[in-house]
Image (cartoon, rainbow, N blue to C red; front, side):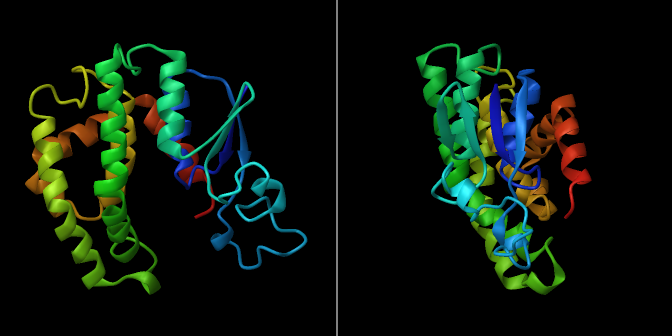
Length: 217
């Protein structure tokens, strides 16, 4: 059985969402981020990203990780690409060209969007003690170009690859979600706004978010 190591309040959310989309049975092993614990070294600390037990699974000390039929994979977006291709269906690439496009968009999200979106999440929508208007605004300014690129890519069909919802949409949507604290970006890119709303209307996303919201903040 597929095993996902992580918690819903992490990048593992991407893998939980996809598993639900594909109706893949899986076991979830809760692994919390070490920085969220007051004393990760305490004897009664829960399994976390710096625990010796977890470092044997992922020596990088990050979540999520996956185990599936003897294969260990790290990196949430790569895990999703693997699972989509393994299980097939409309979320998976129909041919080599679509495979390349899905990989391209996933890497694009990681390289062009995620760092700046996290600036917005942390410094505008995060804990009050971490907020910094200048840093948040820098994230907004840096994303105007990528949002314009994404908006144009959605012009033809409202999806990124093949005119249908695929793992590319899911991977990119889960990165773009971090920028929701900057509504001005979405006002300037109306197709991105509509696309993200459609992604978030999917039952599997709603199920994932319900479990995420049930976890301790």
